[in-house]
Length: 267
Image (tube, rainbow, N blue to C red; front, side):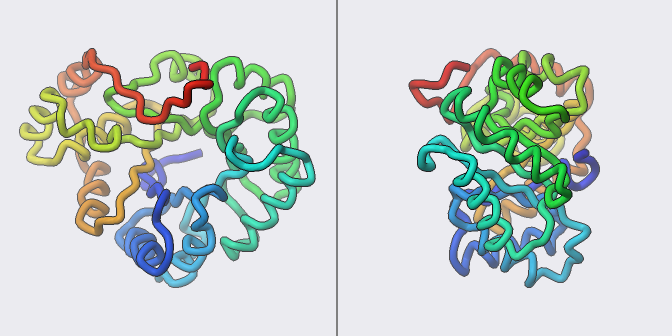
């Protein structure tokens, strides 16, 4: 599903108001083709405005959003239907490329929300179905609930959280893993191995971290930044090819760091 330039997307969390519109528009015009937002981010309207303003054809973009986060009100089918309709309205689009269930609080949420999203795919309004922060058990439940595959699983992944078990679970499927917080919220700057590989290739630590993610089959990265310089720097990861030794050294990093870890979550 995700290939080429869409394997390096733009995360838009906190990119709001006029500055957010300009950042997203700049990213699109610089070459980003995969734009990731969510109802919870409160910026779907800004994403839609940036898409409309950018000098890039809509059909060349891959737009993803998410609904029904655990912080949203108690889930009902009607609530989820309205949330999806509002996302379409705010984005100003008649088609969404990828629609996620955004981080359930438990399996009751999954049983309510996921079939509604699957129906939107079946109706043709949505091209692909995604889930966010599902565990292996959650993925098993999804397989029981709906009669179509999950196209994308979005989870935190970076060199300090390599998600070996989830990637092994997805290895024989067509489900892409979409990595949020791919720079471990800046922690990658403090890892000697990453700094050494970065110096070897004359690039930054973020670029090495993104290139490492892109070296993994079926993995996409969606870094977020409000800095134009960082947008451009991150995009350079598409042109960096780590050699086998580089990848093996990063694979062997023993330090573990999880940025998003609610007390109630059972990973």
